[in-house]
Image 1 (cartoon, rainbow, N blue to C red):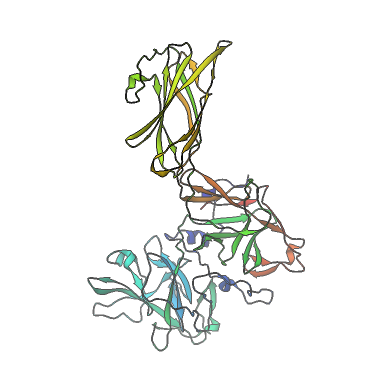
Image 2: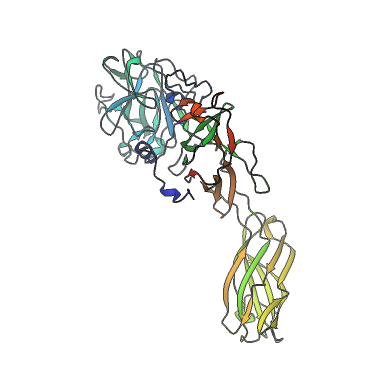
Length: 513
């Protein structure tokens, strides 16, 4: 089995490890253009990423967003995509104090409180002056420890001011620094959508957003993805994961996947992971489909079957109290309790009471369903034992009770209670098993991929639901696949068309969400 210790899977490289170390894990869903290298063998015509704003990772200083973006969009109740709409670059600082420049990024809080992009690079600002305005010519990190008031009140406006309102006055914490170069085409690419200055690029010049020489800050809400909301997948054999964008399939050996706003699993290019969807009979369709993790609740299911395994003490005294009173401990020999569920997922207390009668090896059973102050008494039902080879066997041990009226408008309950596991001996009363098959409404707890690539959603009510089975592709001539971007391929005439199948036997290193 290749999938083991899912939560402790090592990340593929240190950059990814650092990336996942952010308090708010931020996967940029708009990197397809950023990752494109300018070579004739690659094409990005079908790689438009699905993002909140149609960003372009350009260098020419033109507008990279035609969207109307509200000024003052909150930063800390969302993760934000921040870009420059017009001239200039965002200015960023790495852990080694290297300054780099980017036209856009997905920003949130690192563990130390600094505002960072998806690569952990710190956003640089001009610090506010006590006399008003901002200090020019200096670069500073901005840290949440400096903020006053609720973090959710912090906002960024379209000229890059980071602020909130305290006592009806605007409190500023910094202003985003923009940088220009005489020759942007000579910048050296550092990593996805970020560049380093070079001699040929000319001397950098910093300034403020919204002035005549610099563009405005464009903001957009981004899906806020927690650190546990990621899948790190890698194929162990010669096959490829399958993703889709604009009705074209792409192929990769490994990747990090997250959910977008609509719950679809997407890679860092914005392509949707492809899988075989589940069928009602428990198998999987052979038609590819997007993988969607719905956050809707797992619906409740009413209890239909109850199983009890109990040892009854044959030496117990006969109960002579009549009528049966569940409030009187002396009116039964033994009782226990469990929760059952109605059609609305509401829980009710279920109490079986066992009463030894004067007839040898014969017991009566009452069932009490309690909802708050109200209780419903069902019975008596007979439980009788016959002795075979000195061993008692229960007969009439399946009790069927239909159309039990439930409170609150829930549908009547039909119960089958299985007592075939009840024993009779001289040992003391003992409960060894109690089980029922109903459950309440469940919220999504997480997701994992098993050793066969089956994607399983787990819910708070203890239920699991298959979402799909990861599709893998192989090719007659995989060495001829077209390289579209780093680690991303498409099929062509020379590679041959993809041959699609399921994962098993297990060849995926997987993760959990």
